Image 1 (cartoon, rainbow, N blue to C red):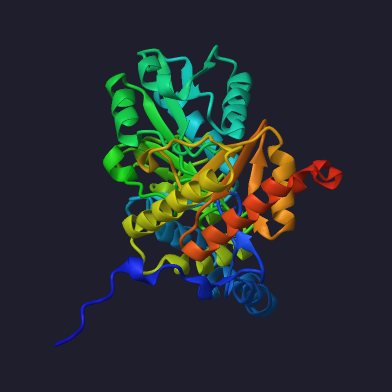
Image 2: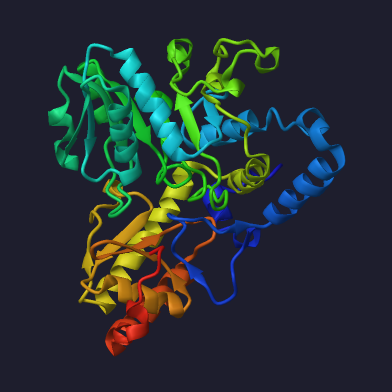
Length: 404
């Protein structure tokens, strides 16, 4: 009689797959994931053995040309997408631009892009920049997150939202909002930057036309790791890329003078892909092998609930800024404190790394791949000591760095 495979939650955390500096409790995976073991070696092999030895031949011999699609297919199951529906490369800002521009072309008689005041600023900047560029009287309308569904009217061309609020972790109802958008005839675009690899997403079941996301947060692809864009398979042949790059062409090396889009999600590729960073990301995604997103989510909720209980018991001067119900938030917890920047710097100096978002948000991310209960309790104890001793009042912690 063979033993049944262990449930994937029993395989968490996987600390042995990551290089975490000794003495560090890392609660900032919602901003930049930690270095996966093997990633540095993979980058070195790509540089020395592939580029260094094969030179330009490596586009064929090392599979460089196919790497963006290979990585996209590894991301696909983490967001409930089918193989072949995700293109990788470029930055998240560029992918937002692609999605919104395409949506406006699909609804030429409509003039409103609807978003919310909790959206990540770059998404709003890119939408407004597109509006200013095309000059066709479009408008960007933002409403409070809780008012989005009521604001979806028949003049809305596209609804563009970030699934998980970057400040508080508040979670949008993806399926409900998508249904409302479609009922009004609008195109739905989801930004999954704070969702991919952190919370279960079924983008296929939602029916959304587009989804975009970055890969340097919960996917641990490293700083500046390439972004991804999903297009619903049944509409891909109607997608008209506003940024028509040569690698989105149906036959890039035919060198035709006019653009002819690839008959797949490949049309959403633009320029030459960042091979070294894609290789690192390819290696990083192996950490998810054998782990179900539902089990990852269960661990995330357990860790975040433990943190909330510990912090509220130890640090009454901090106020929970995230939704109380774990089903209403992503894989992060935020607390408000008037001197949150200084307190976070004091915490970082003690080896507990989170981050700060203006005006008063202390953010903490929970990545079950490399965090356990002992980390959470220790972090809360250190935070308690800092608050009790008012260590954060040291003037050194008030010095503002460029990155907070």
